[in-house]
Length: 417
Image (cartoon, rainbow, N blue to C red; front, side):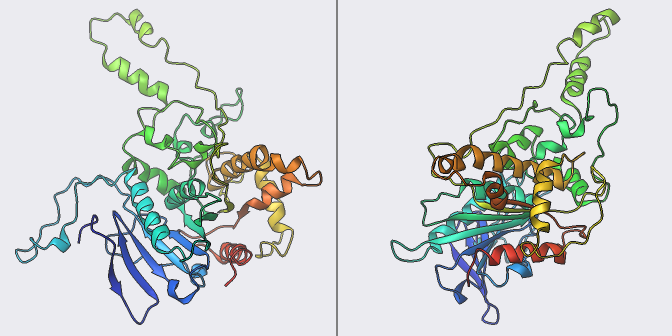
């Protein structure tokens, strides 16, 4: 069976409430869908990384109470090796006609996820002209990049089935933060020579940085707002370099020097370097959602691990794991909004996106309400719509109890089973 075949059931186990269904260029693993009314909100789970072919994506156990669809995707370095050899008995089997020529770098994963999402909205929509079904998306790490752009661009408020909420943990919302030219990797002040700390070796963030060159064709791909959704709200404020690891000016200098021949006088080399220190373009705000669109920013819960090197000294305090039962969640949200984070961390990623989404809410969606509701608390509502929570330290890709409790309570407030 090729990825271009029509949707069909691959596996249906009577002992398990899960079913595999394949959409063009992608697959959806359905869990618990038939155990709830068709109008029950649907969870869409996008794995943190591209799963191995044929691998059954495990659903996080905090999603198990809900009807859930997991969308698999392909995102890995392009294959340089030959296709896997087949036996004479299977070489003509159409069911094994996998396409190994498709580059698996960006934007292939985006196309896969969109294909799976389209199948979901076409096949899991309740019958009846007035029936509606909300979608909530969850992902983490690299998968959260696609999940966030999906949530932001498929949240049409008039649609019968659309994204209403996003939950993401340790997501990458702006891949350009990995580049040396990004302001987060520069000294805090013009006088300072101390560079901010880089991702700690062995950490999940460092691992993503190491994989980056294999996941993207070129640095310019990092500026695609569908993989860096923060760039839906603002321009990057930097030029796309030709190298993932060198500053744009350094890359340009090396390229120019490589063209210098032995006959060039040393004094003439100065002319080669002219114009290299051009000022970076200014970062500018963008209007998102567009004023004439039907998009409405979804509710969002952005979780992040505690940075290994916090930007500021924090007082140790006992926090309850519950998100809404105490003021800890609100305090964490306000702190994450106002405190600048030194260096590239998952906290910096979440803080930037949350700030951009809240600014959009204040400038666009809430502006009309302020005209008739003088008591409307813009700041409090923006923080309720986009909540940032520090979930402490976690091991690898396993979210700890603190984060799971926060997600469970957030979902319980929005999905009634």
